[in-house]
Length: 162
View 1 (tube, helix red, strand yellow):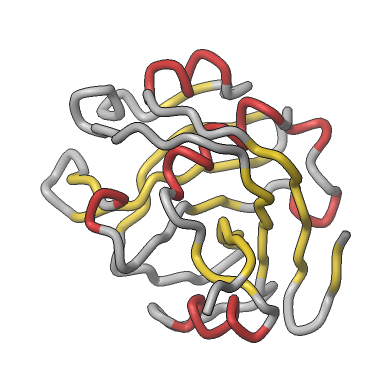
View 2: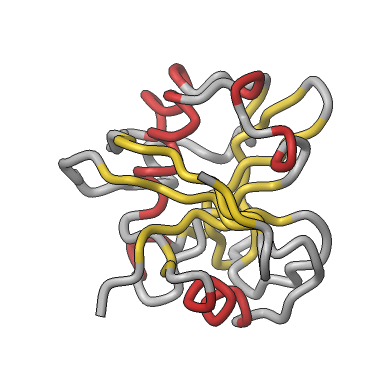
């Protein structure tokens, strides 16, 4: 299912979490990964249970915290335990099976209210786990929490829960 207003929204049903970044790297159809991303620098707690995930793309530059409002406008919220589910999604869906309108766009597991989803980058910056994507590559990476969500960003989301 996808919609186009005010954003592109694509459903990925029944995604299982992956609770180890090492396992995620080996199963995620990546062409590369940022060498600072290890089980030691990205400690993940155990999460169980599949969930329906959505990739939401605003298709425009948005403000640092505007993505939460944008997700709510389409009935979604940031995915809880986003890093584990991002790794699970990358293992489940190779790049060739991604919807065409989401190809070559960066993915981010931005979960603003969960400190266990924020990691310290190589230079001490707080970061979310993300995936850089382009023609012929898919790289597990970090993106700064401070955002600057210019360009083609896609946010990991789930149905809004009141």
